[in-house]
Amino acid sequence: MDKTTRLTPEQRENLVAYLDGELDEETVEILEATLAKSPEARHEVDMLMRTWALMDELPQPNPSQEFTVRTLTAVKTEALTEQNGNRISWYRHARRGIMLGGFAILIGVAAFLGYHATYSLMPDENEPIIQELEVIENLDNYSDVRDIEFLRELAREKVFDEESDDKTP
Amino acid sequence: MVSGNTSQLPYVSDPDVQLMLRAKGGDDAAFEQLVMNYQKRLVGIFYHLVRDQEAAEDLAQEAFLRIYRAREGYRPTAKFSTWLFRIASNLASNKRRSWGRRKEVSLNLQDSGGLGVRPQEKLLADKSALMPNRQLDKSEVQSVVQKALEELNERQRLALLLHKFEGMSYADIGESMDLTPAAVKSLLSRARENLKGILEPYVR
Image (cartoon, rainbow over all chains, first blue to last red; front, top):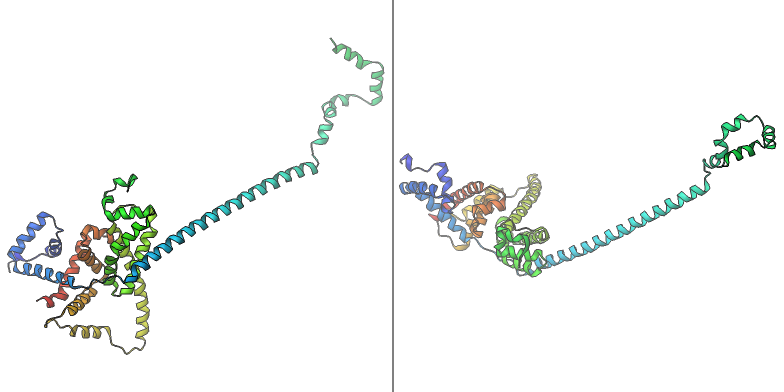
């Protein structure tokens, strides 16, 4: 046989696509030219068509009578399971939310009470300082005074009264 | 009535896509209609893949259930049938893998001392009962074609079935089987060549 009329591997692969109408126009033209010249290629196409036609003989089983009912029942069961799942899921979320909220409130109350209990029971380190603040502020002046008798003497001589008078306008 | 942002999608005019969108919206009657539309086709495809009516129906039921479960997130990005057969293809692959593991175990058990008929001998006996040089009746032809189909690997078989019985284009088969159209072309070419090699003696 003339080599030009023999099918190349690529053309051989194209034969099925040709029969299925899946080739572009240009490839179809080239292939048909080869087919026109090659009895072997035409035989190949013929056999592909005839063996393909045998596939029509395959039995086409019908689903059993129960299939539709069984499938639709399974679908309805699935839907119910989904609904229950959603309900259960919603309930779980709500319960979890309530529990978390409760815990948060408890923690808040405990913190509030704890703070106040601590504040009222524990001694305040600043309290003595506040009480003695006046003394602390005048500590330098007090250091200059030798003793209490000296102060009393100044008071008797009305030194403090003069200072007060000096300050009054 | 389908409305909203889905109206711009190209497959929304597919009547089965419309049914699926109604099912997504909670219309159970629409889903029921889809089951009615596809049950025979789906069981048929599975039957030729697994050669067992009960198993085929179980797989078809599982496919419908998967579709139902996926309804809320459904978007019509392909023809409904393409989507359905993609799910079917995945199911068939999973089933084959699980059966493959089971078969391996059972074959190992048989190897340890079984005296039964070996697979090659069984094949020869089957073939001799259907010699091509005589006229075959319809059931014999069915048997021959079914056996020829079984000789193909599962991907070739599925592609053939989708093309033959669903009339799917190479592009749609590719979408269902996760292949490019070029790969489908090659797959179908090899499948048809194999089929021809087996069945040619019966069509002379």
